[in-house]
Image 1 (tube, helix red, strand yellow):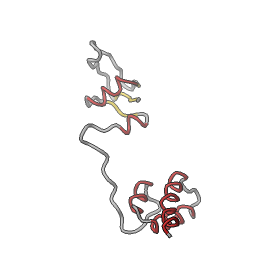
Image 2 (cartoon, one colour):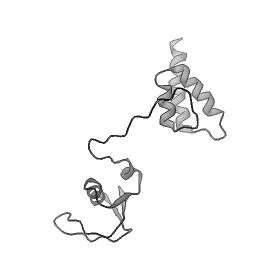
Image 3 (cartoon, one colour):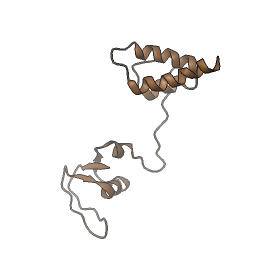
Image 4 (tube, one colour):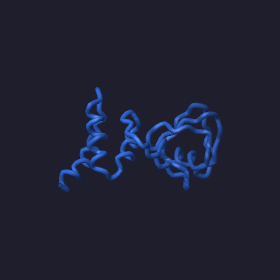
Length: 119
């Protein structure tokens, strides 16, 4: 976990004051502590960006009525849901793109394969 300070401050951590300068990168337990206490820090790596305060889980993506293949992978998967026909439609649209998203293609292939097994 890695965060960057937005200003200089000295939090009390591990039985002492820890002087931090503006723009300093902090990792590990201290980084988590700074996030948990709402200190003036910005997340740098994926772990820090994914951290959410207790009770603030990531919101569910809205499910659009029509397929928007340019939307985020989460939005495409939300549109597909458990429907193998929608998965096949989204898979075809994604594979028709100049640069298909490989992870999304794999997930759509799995969802579309359910239809083949059921028939």
